[in-house]
Structure formats: C-alpha cells, structure tokens
Image 1 (cartoon, rainbow, N blue to C red):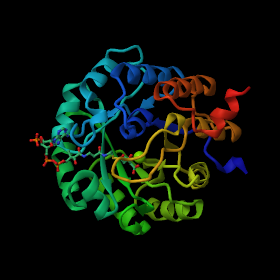
Image 2: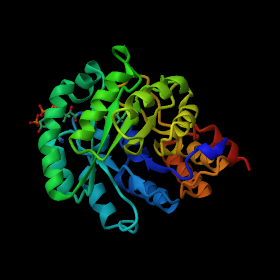
Image 3: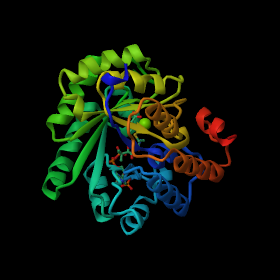
Image 4: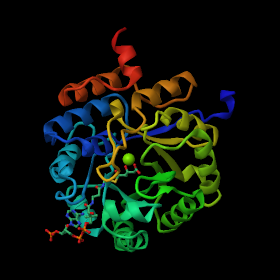
Length: 304
Ligand code: HMG
Ligand code: MG
C-alpha cells in the first residue's frame, strides 16, 4: 500500500511561531534561539521563526527583529531557511531589515476569522498583499501563503472546499510559491481533507500545496495520512505539538513534529529528521514552559 505514498516529505517546523505565539508567558529570545538551534540540529531545514505582526496584537512575537537577526548570523544560517509571517507591507519591510529571505502571508477562507485575526475582510487582505508581493518579487524573496479555516471557522462554522480552492488559486496567481491549507481549529477528519484536497488540487497543483493540521480533535496524524494518500508532500508541524492561534479560541497545537516523523519512518518516507534529536528539542522547550510534552509519542519514548 505504501508504494502509492510519496518517498519523501518536506516538513515546515512552525513551533517557534505557531507554538510560541500562543503561550501566555512571553518566552525569552535566548530560549527561542536555543530551541531553533536544536530543531536545526535535528535536521529540520524549514523553521518558521517568528511573525512581523503588531506587538500590540501578539506580544509574544515582539522580539521578531532581534531573533531573526541572530538566526541569520547563527550556526545554521547556511543550511536552514527561516520564513516569517508578514501580514502587510510594513511587516515585510521590517522583516527585510532584519534579514528575512522568505516570508509568508496569511489569509482566511472565512470572513469572520479574517476580521478577528487581521482586522480586515478577505478582499482587503489580498489588497494588502499586493504591494508586499511586488516588493518581494523585486527583492527575490520567496512568499508562502496560508489559508486559515480551510475546514471550519471558530466563529462561523463549516467552510466549503470551493471557497478555500478559490482563495488558494488567487494567492497562487499573485505569486505565492506554496499555499498551506490551515485547519486552524483542527475539526477536519480524513474524509473532509480528501474532499478539500480534491477541490483545491483542481485549481492549484498538489506540488504547490501544504497541509497545516491542528490537532484539537486528535485527527491531525490521520489527516496527514489522508493527505499523503492524495499526493501531498509538504506538512507543517510543531515540536511537542505546541500552538494554536490567539484569535481561534480553544484551538490547540499543530500535529506534533515527533508524531509526523514517526509516522513517516513507519511508512519509509524520508524526512531528513533525527527523531531522538527532535525529542531532545521537545524536552528542552517543554522544560522551559514547565510542562510535560503533550505528545503521546514523546511520552512513550521518554520511558525507553
Ligand atoms: P490593524 O490594527 O488593522 O492595522 O492591524 P493598522 O494598519 O490599522 O495599524 C494599527 C497599528 O498597528 C499601527 O500602529 C501600525 O503601525 C501597526 P500605531 O500607529 O497604532 O502605533 N502595525 C504594525 N506593527 C507591527 N508590525 C506590523 C504592523 N502593521 C501595522 N506588520 C495587523 C493589522 C495585521 C497588523 C494586526 O491585526 C495584527 O498584527 N494581527 C496579528 C495576527 C496574528 O499574528 N495572528 C496569528 C498568526 S495567524 C495563525 O496563527 C494561523 C496560521 O497558523 C494558519 C492556521 O493555523 O490556520 C498561520
Ligand atoms: Mg496555525
């Protein structure tokens, strides 16, 4: 059965951004740098480091410039990519001043979530991205995009796959090289993910799509598997399953990177990640946060 599955996947580690944006305590920059260093040592090559959003909205990411500057002069600068979230031109320009070589814009397939998260409509968000896309193109900076609420919205309920497909196609057409489909509140089940990918892949090639599955309802690994069967090869994941979104009440973290790597190992799918070193990175950040790693896999392996 695994013959039909991809031989290799690319993991985009989003723990330092999606994970730490959601913590009530503000994590010191030095701790973030240590975590990102451990993730890079474990073999992760795409690590979403921070967000150039308003510090009044998300104070946890206020050290974005200092953090990114340090990463670009750090030991993994040549091997790791450190994309950052940029909601508008202002964020893009700050990110560039701090040395960003790759950024990500984020839109939502739900009007209500767009308003709560970035204080504008979906159409206005696309207008905000236009000057950013032009600047990025001129600078040779790669732009990734997120479509949040790809399955459901915390404010307005289920979201139709056609709505997600239309927005993903628009973002691709604007020049984003990859569109990450965010099940922001983790309500999706494998059957829904298949329907979603059928709809979106009819408009955007599967090679330009990524899965960003939050694990709120315990479906994230199953959803990754469904997406693998559909031919998806890029997955966002968060060490120790950290995360959520400050504007999606009740949402919990992404699929734990540890669980994604373990799943792939069992299917002979290459990730380039050393599971033991990844577990060490998870143990480090959980100790800093004063909690036990919530990933079942991490708990099981800690007793070995
Ligand atoms: P706004 O208030 O509508 O913006 O915020 P504005 O243009 O009216 O400006 C208001 C103030 O913000 C001004 O400052 C601007 O200069 C400043 P003031 O004059 O009042 O002092 N400002 C900025 N400051 C820093 N960086 C910027 C920036 N832009 C304006 N880039 C804005 C609009 C988007 C900035 C705001 O709503 C915001 O920061 N929202 C945060 C959204 C966020 O970070 N959400 C979490 C990440 S998304 C997510 O987690 C989902 C994802 O994981 C996928 C999934 O799971 O679905 C990606
Ligand atoms: Mg997310």
